[in-house]
Image 1 (tube, rainbow, N blue to C red):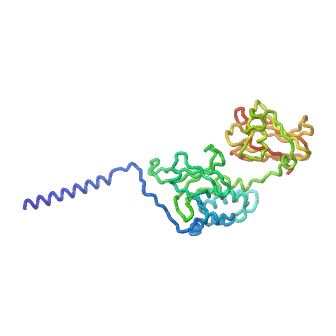
Image 2: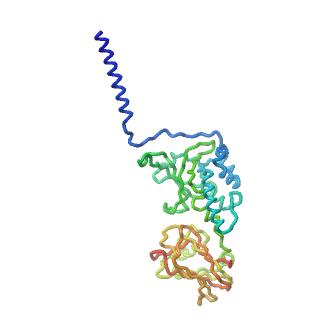
Image 3: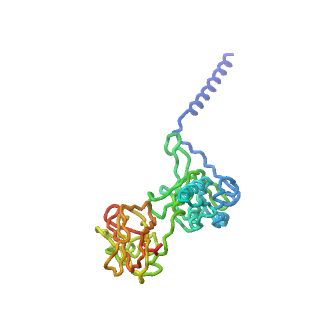
Length: 372
């Protein structure tokens, strides 16, 4: 009897010890970090069919894809789609039409907004190749190229905070429009809400619903009134400058770059208190518009104050427009300046006397345009 009682007592103690051990282990802190196995969604169809299988979620995106003729790209090509849900389009359209309403203009919709601008913005979200999050784990992220125009985008995987601890939450992709700049401070970003949905021809990552379609360009692209034709191009002529780049007019950042029609290049030179650029047209013409486009980096080099002038002989100048305390808000940004003028001049000149800061001037593009 004693032996049986001792055995029972020992068995109970052992069970109690195991129970306490498990309870204690279950109560241990895990450091705030929870890393479950990633769930890889698999859709037995192509990327376009995946979007169609989600009624009420991607209806607006499908309208854009259909209008831009991108069905084949999302059906056959090996691509990664950063999918935009309906609320992203609704927010963008609401902002645009609020501004249009204030100007007594009719509202715009995805069916009738400018197709060129819509195509450009839609292309940001479809990039080459199948790219799961594992391919974006590099410290500097991954450079991406859009399928349509080879536009440079960027993606990087990070962990969001959870339970008050940094890096303890789910993986998200920081997806960025680089605006063709190597400087991150000029990029516009978005984050994903779901990742790694595999389709027959690629990968789908779904962007958060608070993302605005087009990043920060939707309203500006669709409200910008383009300038009249460029007289430098349609008439032709000769550019002269007070002071050129140290490498000369033909250098990589010489004066010829400011009229080459490419916003990716620029004219860079010392201001030394004043720097003018003049253009002699082959035949006189009336201009009442000119444009300036900001260059790729260093906002302190932007022109801040200047005088725009016209001349019959290139010696005696008449002031046509004067600006001061001017600032570009973005890189590669074209600004259109309109002024009153009805006289045909053969010579036009912009005389810059102040920069945003410092003494080095830069500008991507300058144009002289026909009268409005």
